[in-house]
Structure formats: C-alpha cells, structure tokens
Image (tube, rainbow, N blue to C red):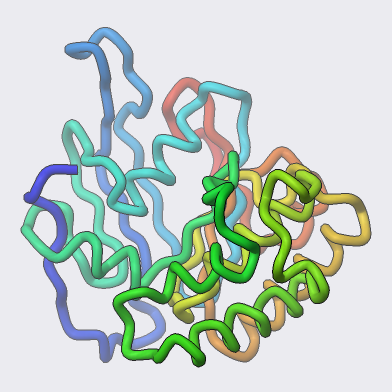
Length: 236
C-alpha cells in the first residue's frame, strides 16, 4: 500500500458512527483491464458481525484487503475505525493495534511453534516476553489448542493451523476482526466453538467482525449477509 492511506480521528465516537465506511470504491488491476471492485458502497456499525458472500472472484477478498489497508482503492474512499484512505498514517501500527486479520491460507511461520506464531503478533507492544508467551498460551487454549503450544505448523492439521491463525488475530485485542474463510478448514465442533468464541468477544469486548465465507453456519450467525457479484454489492 502506498503512503497515502488513512488518518486518525477521535476515538470517542458514539456507537452509531460506522466502524467501516466504503463509498464509491473501485479497484482495478493490470492497467484497468481487470476490475475487481466496481463502485462499491459498504457500511458496518460497531459490534456487528457481517458475512461477505458470493461466488469465487466476485471481489470479496479484494474488499477485505482494502479494509485491512493491505491495498489502496483505485478510486473512492475507505474509512475504517476513524482512518481515512485519502490521508497518510502509520499503516503498520493500524494493522498491529486496531485490527485482527485471519488469512485464508493461514500465513503461519513454519519454523515457529504455535505459541511463537501467536506471540510474534505482539512484538512491538508494551508486553514483556513472558507476558506475550502467557497471552499466546491463553489464546491457544481459547481455540482448544492446549497441549499443542510447542508444535510447529507442518506437524498440525489444517484445522489446527486455522485455529492458530484465529488466536494470532486476537493477540492484540483488536477492535475489528477481518477474516477470509475463518472456518473453512474446521470440523463441525470446531466451527461451533469458534463462533461461540466470536459471540463472546462481541458481547464482552464489543468486537466488530467482517468475514468472507461460504459456510452457511457462519452466515446464519451473522447480523447481515452482504452478497457480492461481479465486483458489486448486490444485496446488503
């Protein structure tokens, strides 16, 4: 992402102020020959769980990347947690402190243990090493991976790796969780447990969540399903 991305505003916002505002956003690649998003409007309010649904290639993941400041829109405006895409800001700090990211392919470091993969997300915070390790173990227990803390990703199942990724995304107490197919490789019991964890975080911490999903169980537990097709929002 270029340096022209997002500027902070007052965090003391009333609860009716959107966490996410996307206005007239388009995103194209290959000198405009590929249009991933086409004039998208999208709003999310505090504490909502919103499911992004639609066929493969409809722009869901591209929109999620713009919300996470991993990329910039070709045109239009993205405003997330008081940061505006028209102005410069500390993008790394924004991602580290304000949002949690769950990637579809996990993006774990294979040479680190489960505990280390979660703890590394807290590097650069005020927590001491022992505190980071303790919090990592607690988060792994919350996603039912107690006893797996010392295992490295290649020795774990796809579902276990996905749960490490979820624990890592929660490491810094984000206000917004952005997740790309967070339950895609989980079995039924793990899906139910993960959704219960998300519900508890919404209730106790006021966490706002946007999830790309094809899983009807996730969609059924969401407040809204935002359907996309051909780079456009067709139903919100």
